[in-house]
Image (cartoon, rainbow, N blue to C red; front, top):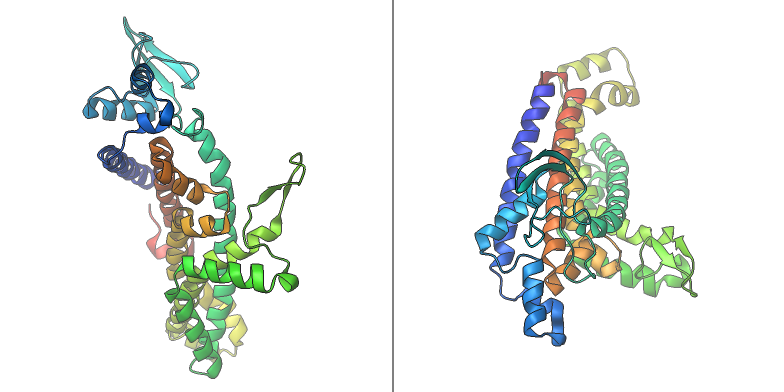
Length: 358
């Protein structure tokens, strides 16, 4: 198991390297100069050159790429020359020196995601740490609703196969899979946050943390979580229902299920003790993929509901060409994809000993 996990981590590092390479060169060949955008209308030649030197824009694209890899790497080489971009500045890096050479220092440090171009030199790591928890709360809430409700209705749909109830569930789940999330978000915000506001008391937009009218106190507004959670959970809910139904129907045709029935066990006992665990494998596969994609795919939902999450931050960064925030967010999401996949492989081994890795 340990060697398998290490092997997966190795592949994950290679994947992250590919992601870093693609997004770096992709955003650096796009039109527009971040240095000019940072200066706006107050630009003069000296300020422009200082900005380019500060962020390494005056270097060839290949050198900038190596600088970026050096910033991300936990083991990196830094210059002792203050004029050099790689100078070991304590305000930029959290590090511990390993070896000191004549003009360079080898250090062990936390990955440095650089500073935002548009947020007064705020560290990208701070931007992500402020928004990612809100996205995680939204994603966990949505996938929890999808799992609990989806498994429940999937089991009922399998038990009452080919009945009117089964057909209704099938139609609803198909509709849920086919409707885009951004359209559902607009529809739910308008219907439940505006038209039916007097009955639901829900807001059209809002984040988890709100500020009072005097701007002094921050409080949690849990009701703002309801509509984004429902909208984000509709599509995975529909997928879980279909997968749970089909998987359970297949399991119920197995010989050991017929043996259990011949012994007089009730349907509830058979499903709970024998069938449910074996029917969950495809559901786990779908849930893991959907949960990881929710962390990245909540962009439109967060933007429409004005939810202060990583998705909305990415949209704002794209509008202002804030490259460090975009690249840092993409890398964070890619790393979470990899970690979730490793976790799911471990869950597989628990659910099905036949595929347990050694």
